[in-house]
Image (cartoon, rainbow, N blue to C red; front, side, top):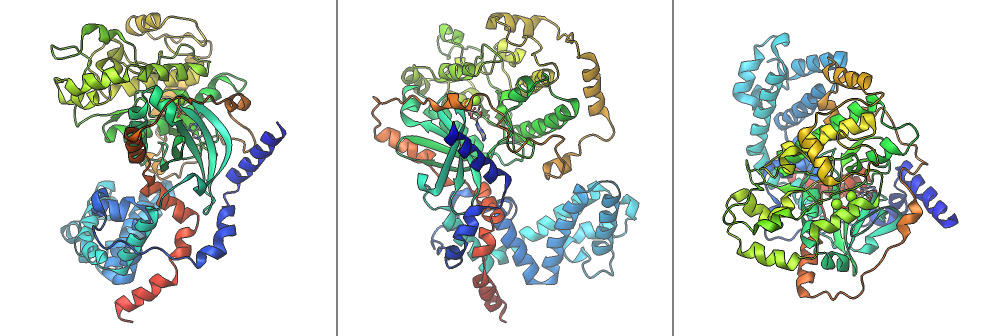
Length: 587
Ligand code: ADP
Ligand code: MG
Ligand code: MG
């Protein structure tokens, strides 16, 4: 216990002091380090050489494009500043918002202003320059913003691609491609346990950035046929770029494990907060805040045609500041546009009896930690080989199913956790994004009442009975504290001054509750220490191919954020760039 305690203290100190000790130690040696030379061929390959990705989404790309604009000429600089000032305006509230708006209008919408937007925003400028201040609303702002982006995507973007700023970006991309191994990180204590291995805290040696590392035991993955699910989880984590969804920073492998390195969430999961901290349930102000973030996270997944299918408080993790994110994408699936998940058996489908197989995280007990792991075993089962063969030969009837059938038998389309599954899943109907909203409803109920609408806390009840209640019974609010909080909840949502989603998305809304830095919000940390290894599985070249596909190293958006936040970007982006820019401007 002594050493564990020591580790915990160390971890907590690291998490609390975001002073990046690694950077300070490594600082001297790194300032002499320089960025690699980009490979001359094939600019950026498949990952997108579009304006959105290069100049908006990737943090380092965004920075360098901005530097380019400010450095080029006053027209480009004005366009860059307009976008920033508009963002600022949008994210302010009340008086500050009015002030920001006046400033924007004076700066960009007065023909006599040096930064008048007519020079780049064309028609939009002509239309809005004559508008009075009260008529210049958010819709007008959106219009001008779009006109500005259209302008930047043209000439300025193509000039940028030929500038030293972009060369510098390519150097960063080259650096980003470095091979990631276990040696890249320090490893700290275990944070939790999943079906394929433990999750532990890690720190990037040279930036000091803390992350959580989910380790998937290669042999266990193989025995349980979990490779495909692991890959889906990785791909979804990698794609998601939201403040409310766990971000993936690195995916790599060592001899024994595939590793997902992601945002460290040290505030525990919401299930723990509902049941294990004295008074059951969560205070209404917190419920509203979490639900706003959960909703934003789910909307983000849906915008990418991803159905989460495992929305429940246990999968919502809090970070050290008290902000929450969705985690655990083992059951998520991506749909082709506009398709639903089809559960109906048709002539071309697998035999009827396979329809009965229950697949997905069927959890028996709300309070228990093991249930989910047992459930996960059921998802992937032992029939992987059989499934693979079936999937190869199956002429599935619709695109949606065809897509899913690459990974699942039709029975796996019934997925989720008992108590949170929507009627359309339980009735084996076609379903789409709606199932996640049902689960959000159940989760809100649970946050308030510390039980599920159709299942009491720790109630020993058959899954069939929960299904029956979900399909047939009305949702009752009979819990002793229910009435008032539910009214409260509803009034919170109907309040004129509710959550400002622009500010929430920009990370500007203070959490109503902050985890204590020296408290561990998880049960029995010691219990995680027993890791059973699977020894007698031989890995072959096919496994190796899969491990390669999985271990793609640094993930652009999160990695670039780390470089910027840790100071590495400023450090390495030093005088070299300034010198070459001066040259480029002919100074
Ligand atoms: P599985 O899909 O195998 O259930 P999870 O992704 O749910 O694995 O991770 C297992 C446990 O590890 C979680 O219940 C949680 O306690 C912990 N955990 C997972 N991700 C993080 C994270 N990013 N930060 C902190 N703890 C985490
Ligand atoms: Mg889990
Ligand atoms: Mg999972």
